[in-house]
Image (cartoon, rainbow, N blue to C red):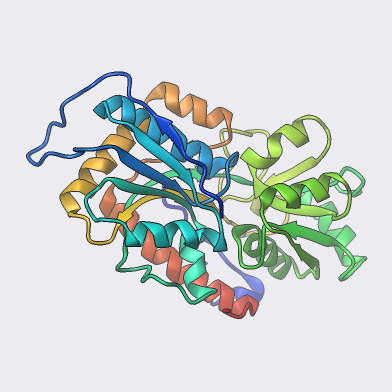
Length: 333
């Protein structure tokens, strides 16, 4: 499920901290049905964002199931910071033997266009699989007099520059999704960046900002409780997690689509054979009907793409985001 970013209007030329160790112990031992012995020792799962979000949920689930599959501990370490590049740098520096794994968000394809990195995003990390797609939603504070995208556009046009939106930081997926929306709809919002998704949603609930574009995982409990109002999903298609909610594209901004995804990576010099075997195992985990159901309940759509598919997709995403960031005018730091 590789979903392109469709772009029109002002961007029409475009293609569309702290380490928290937890040990997961396997419940049963199984031999690896391959030529080379792997894994041969406890593994480490690096998670690029803080505990509690969709990346964390996905990474911990994979770690638990890998431990059960191979009968070896998998140590889970949250390494948030710098748009996920702290954890990615740790992965790039790890031994390329398949025993250090990274779960990261689509931010891994965004940061190369935003900052100087201590690693080469094309050579020092090896894509393994596109694990899940995390559908995003456009949510507003209940005080905003808009229940549809068209009503929100009318409201924002009557107050140019006065409508505040929150994001998890400059250059993050939330920021880019909102900027793309504002450009395609011909609006002028004011961006209020935060240090993470949680505080950006907290201030939205408190009414300090009017709207945000965030994952279903981080917002569903609040719009289900009436503390926020979900207006539309950000993807090109409706999500099974919220089948009643229309897309932004079908609600007033034709062509709009923005997807957040979570992928799994290995150090760049890891033998390709190990990457393929890890991908096959993760796909088996994610596409198990019970696991798919569990992920869907949390607003996550399982994918489990092949290693070759994800490698192509990752490269396409880096190119896409580089063009989008240049069009929006965000300067690298």
